[in-house]
Image (cartoon, rainbow, N blue to C red; front, top):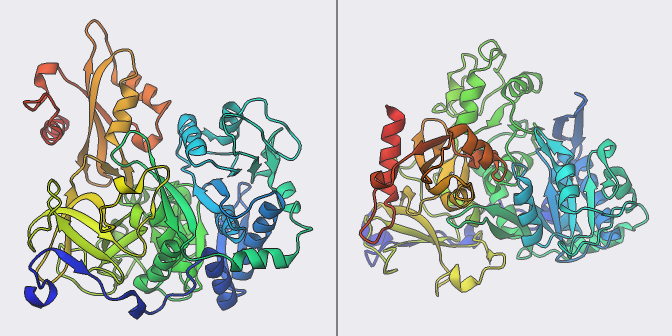
Length: 560
């Protein structure tokens, strides 16, 4: 293809094919999606999960749909209505799906809460999203969610779990999905579900049918480049469109058995796991959280054919004692470039889709999904999307081939951040700046080059250095701190904090990391802490830190 045919002006603005030409999309509402796949696949196995007692539980598509409706009835009976926000603080368990899709069937918006969160982070999410109904797991690993909730909301009444607390003026009910762990003030899951038994089917049907593709369906929290996480609103259309797309992009058959241990509070795992599997009639094999030894056993017992894992998880899987001798012959959907493909029993010619996107676009807006593209590129612009490359300072469009900031617009773009003015998020043409650097090739393929901002991408999660620095600077021995991301083989980057200690104070690495763990999720806690003298820090003439130079210095120190 010539540059002239694709870029008539010679400038880096490219629109994908018209959205109406796209094939293979089903219902674009969450209730419609769940109803459609239940009607298509009925009694086929949809979910498999080993419960806390070690017993394997299974749900068909019909069962899954029925459980979502049961949650919807319970929510409506409890007073949930259109626009209510239902917080879901649950690991990779079937109840996550039942709650999220059930909330949508009741007309509500699901707030996908991060199970890595500390108590202070949970408080922020509860208050910022004005959560009305909160569905929690008792705890995950070292996290005690019941304890956190009771600590944040002391003196709550018992009985049916109704709340009245001025710190959380909209919070009305907290439900624990682990019945035997419910406490005073926290309603048991079974009791909650029973509350909807007297509600007629016609009300849930009507609420589900009233859902619109442009309704707010989900809210995700993501650390961008600011100190506090942004609440990213997403439409039902965005979530479901990407699920249908991933079902096509992955190209798996109806017998696929997909393992996932990554949180559904990340849009990428939501789209990849639900889309690749549920749109074709396959089965999701769920693991509450990533435990490599348990995962290998699940691979064998459940004949997993598609594992969805981040690179650092793959590395840990291959280190398991049972790895080499495990019967993984069922794994037919493993990219040959992945570490997992080194297992002697895995023979696969399958290729994992590649693309570029973000939580704000509910994953890919460009992708090599099913098509071969030049090495080093991330594919063409997908239907309905427009991507521009601009000068990050002037905002002017750049010539094709020149690197600049990637800006995006399209049907899966977030309608905006919660409680942030849209004019600060979108330009006058409706484009959102990504903070990422890239360029177009002459043939219309996007090349993503990295982040213009200082955001750290570690293990698939975005981490804000500003947020970490704000926490560490509260330590009495810290004068100032500058956090950077240093390249890592499996995690992408690791979090490294460069610290100046106050005169007359002493500070140990373990002490500062232990302090950080009180306020930050585990993946945000610095992997490494490096101490600097003030004169060592690379500063600009205006006395600002030169983070690129500091990053190089940190990397050099760690390599010694």
